[in-house]
Image 1 (cartoon, one colour):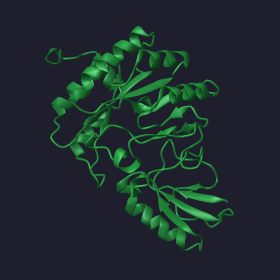
Image 2 (cartoon, helix red, strand yellow):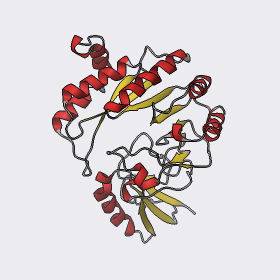
Image 3 (cartoon, rainbow, N blue to C red):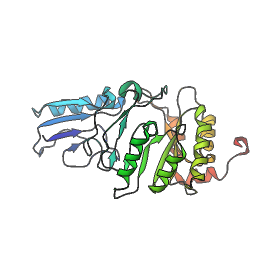
Length: 278
């Protein structure tokens, strides 16, 4: 069956084959049997509904799904809803973070059949069994590119044998997460384990940390301290801006985030860490 996949927005992970669209149906639409509207973010639902209406006019069956629609997700099909190279080997998460809908949508944790890819998008791969994790790294050893762990590794779960696998795989980038105050000590511990295991990163290009900012009750002073703390723990800080259910953010927080996403500015700020953060 030939399925057209339609996405409300294009990201680096959006498929780029001839049956992947971010627009209403073109005049020269290839032969298609069915249309899937894939919605990842709740704030894209309105645009997705508009696209669905436009695609309905083709007379083709149109289905709407995705994380924003509450789909738990099944086995992962490479290249279908994520560009080739991206892979998901598990769904769900045993944590209950207040800002995250993964456990309520996907369940506690499900290990999936391992398919090929080098960009791991699992919500919490370190929560998987050792057997599964070793199977994933065995798969990574056969890929044409060095692995990237983009899902946010859980520093509370990392163990020395994980570090050994990351080192052996010559990991290109690994993203950890710093979402609340309780994450700091585990993050410091993870940084120490990685350094002691031979994974060091003075350039800021290998070990990174998503730092959640701008959530209700947050302040820029507190957010800045968390960004500095992530750096001192051994990770390049990546400011991840909180969005509410409508996808709305405050302009001052958007400006703050932009500053912390510009490498030249971040290098300068990190080289001039104020004594108030020490």
